[in-house]
Amino acid sequence: MSDGAAALADRFFAAIERGDLAEVEACYHPDATIWHNFDRAEQSVADNLTVLRGVCTVLANRRYDVVRRIVTDDGFVQQHVLRGDAPGGELALEAMMYVQVDDGRIRRLEEYLDTGQLAALRPPR
Image (cartoon, rainbow, N blue to C red; front, top):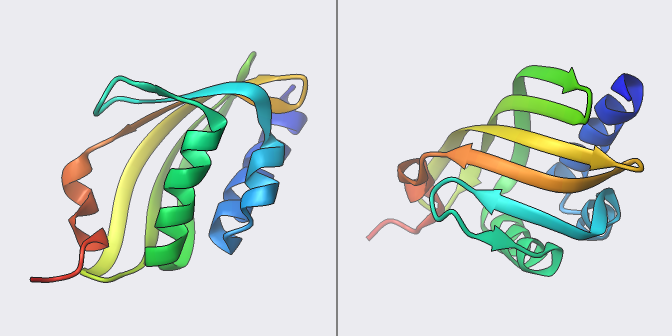
């Protein structure tokens, strides 16, 4: 799975950088779940795409600086910094993801981040 998981990770994050949500959706298994540490709620693919659409709208020049990626038996773990130009200034969001891959697509994505880092996404007062 190592080559496949790494290629899927590259494809998934490049699609987010481009704002290509159709490609992001194609990376997800149809019944994938997305979980975040800050609310402990599971999202559907459709709900996650709604969030990503909003992020793509307000965050220009998106890019992921990958700190490390470890391919596992069932997917990959990635530590990265999401950077971009936001209404409140430059965003530098440090995050970690554990991603389970099934049949070449993301089955489950668990994202760990500090929501305090999201302040730049809001316009200044």
